[in-house]
Image 1 (cartoon, helix red, strand yellow):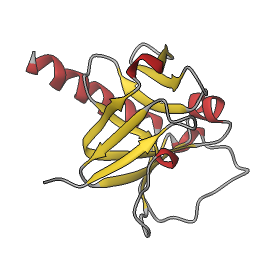
Image 2 (cartoon, rainbow, N blue to C red; image 1 turned 135 degrees about the horizontal axis):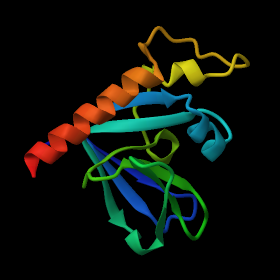
Image 3 (tube, rainbow, N blue to C red; image 1 turned 30 degrees about the horizontal axis):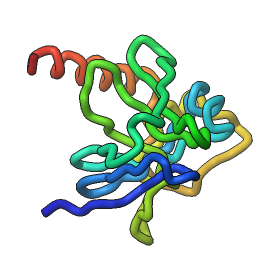
Image 4 (tube, rainbow, N blue to C red; image 1 turned 180 degrees about the vertical axis):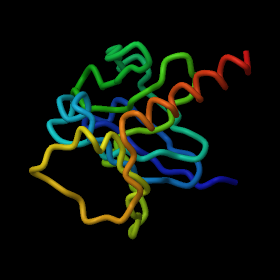
Length: 147
């Protein structure tokens, strides 16, 4: 049985479960920084993030042609980023989950959009916007081939 990690919004109305091994990702894109007021610290899970309770309290904003960002309509907690055209939630905000101690940053993305006033002490791979868009395109093509 895969590892599971429980998560919830600030008010507890939305309950999430991360399934599989977690990875910590940092996103420096301007949209995430506007959304969070800082870079996004997301946890991705091998078998995705699943909504356990409170689906009726989740509101989503389509922030681009390829993704939406979800939040709790009761307390405003940022919940997850979701690629449109996919049924799977790949990552959610790391702070929502009780993650294991010692978890290291897996990668930093959109590093070419990172402002110069902060830096993480990490030797994790640093991925540019162009490299991320290549991943998105590959993922979307795989999704279309599965249909």
